[in-house]
Picture 1 (cartoon, helix red, strand yellow):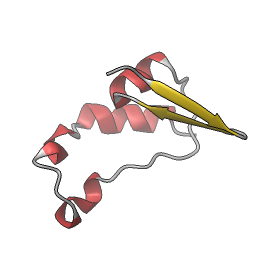
Picture 2 (cartoon, rainbow, N blue to C red):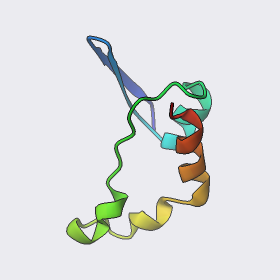
Picture 3 (tube, one colour):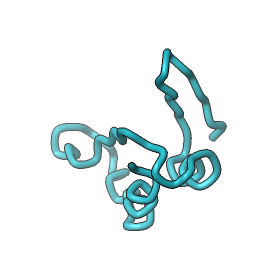
Length: 66
């Protein structure tokens, strides 16, 4: 997947593989907000992709958050 980036005012929105983006594009402590949907898996149809949220991904999110 190719990463896509949009800037709106002071906000930078990035769409891409979360591990790639966090590893290659973001420095530690640079993220103000992370939006995910997996905690609400029982309210949506994800076709089993909830299992894609491994401890590695959660740790990467923790690393880039302020």
